[in-house]
Length: 474
Image 1 (cartoon, rainbow, N blue to C red):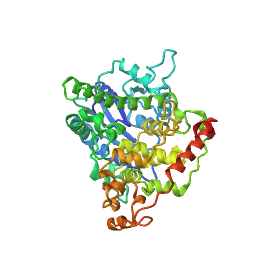
Image 2 (image 1 turned 90 degrees about the horizontal axis):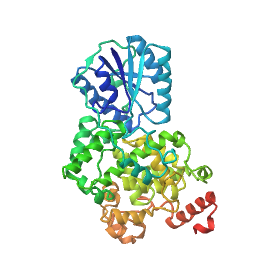
Image 3 (image 1 turned 45 degrees about the horizontal axis):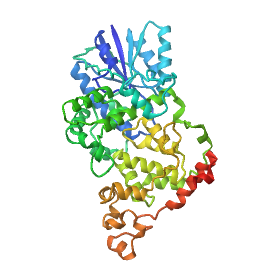
Image 4 (image 1 turned 135 degrees about the vertical axis):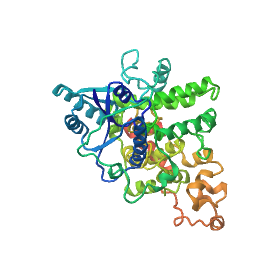
């Protein structure tokens, strides 16, 4: 039997049901189909590097990867005809674009003799499995988490021991270097210094986190200068790592006494699951708020302020540090990620979808489910979201989670010589202090583009407008 295995957001050989099943049926032709983009994103760079490693993995197993471009369903249909394939296997995805591609492809099965099989997506459970007592999808994380803990999470599938190669000259196949996933201007050079994508690197990163940081995760994860997070998000987003494999690895670490209480980290994996789950059940949430009243939110969408936010020039050091970290490394510490998102939405009244689009372009760990639900959570427009009146004070957050200013000084070197007492609010420093530190507000570092108190009041008025509670909020 000759089987095409369509690789998607699952750039690995372990816990890959489609590849494993195909390997047991006969000859395998691994294929990835890339989109045409005007300009590559940060996550495209991650995909490029991941494909480089996947190619090596497949060669070790006795096969090789074919790279194509085009519409997935029509490209696979033509490929199956050209190669006289017996089957097409692939792992499912839950976002609406991918699901539409899958439906079109599955419909082709009735028009041909090709066996087309869809296997489980990179989730802990089938998203149609968990339901409330009334048979409805969960909308509150707490209830979802309680139900998830009662489920038996399937074990990941093992990687194939070997693959039987299916040699064939494929029309339209291209070398990886011509994929368009790398920028011709080398804009992603700084990403090379920060990350090593790929399946093997994902295992190494997990081992480092397990041995050095997992047991302290709950205490250190909110402090951006402590390196207390897992740094696994990029590997999960691209599918370098299987989520079921990670879940069971955490459970093993608990059993072995390495991390006796890993619940805080498991809850983060459950939040990822909840995001995928909600995207599956409510596929229009990438464009529409889950709460209908937010359709009438009075966004200002000031383009100048939006550009200041993107460039890390808002005059709020923690916000600016986060946005500069994003540009340099393709990621932001999770606590700071919430602060910068809250600032854009609630201080500047910029539509959360504009922020989500910027993250799509700049995050190496971009994931449509996590990204969408994260922004809707901060905006307050999700089912189980942050309260609308929770407006992060970026200065208070800065003083609490970066007290010594180590994170700010790393990403905003022009403020590095300010004393701690003024680092979080440069505008409070005297002219003498600013001069000694080499800071000229409005020139070397911007003044705040909005006043926090005024912005907070304006945001509450905006939320009151859609909720009919203006006087009550004040």
